[in-house]
Length: 169
Image 1: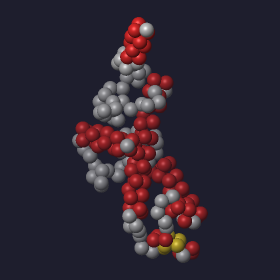
Image 2 (image 1 turned 90 degrees about the vertical axis):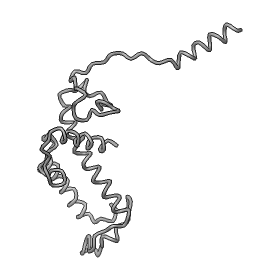
Image 3 (image 1 turned 30 degrees about the vertical axis):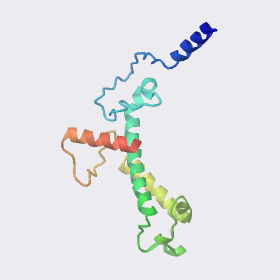
Image 4 (image 1 turned 60 degrees about the vertical axis):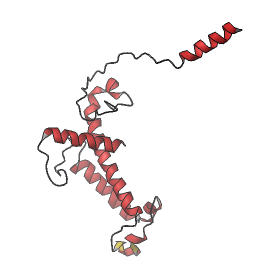
């Protein structure tokens, strides 16, 4: 009986022992100094696409940066709208709909007239295809950082890393 208890304890203790890490190598061989590889995550590739599709890594990183910018702007818009900071005037004069009449939360999208939703989607398409195309990998869309260009490459890399991490959060 004592032998059975000792064997059970020994095998259950093995479940909590540290696992040995196998050495892994990516085909892309991204250095830790690349954009987006910051502490504590290192290179952020949760789906392992750097191993399976290394040729599309740069485009995916550019799309991640652009979508992070859109997400951060959306969060600011949500915070502003949920605090009832609204424009004066009408959202739709023909429907007699004021900006202050739009409810907060998900119900706000339902209050916008169909023509207004199409205008929003057309603006998104313009931004996606003409102003911020996904083929522009460097993240510089000509608008600067609050209106001023960043000349120092180290400072620009640091700010792009901050931007990537904020978009992931």
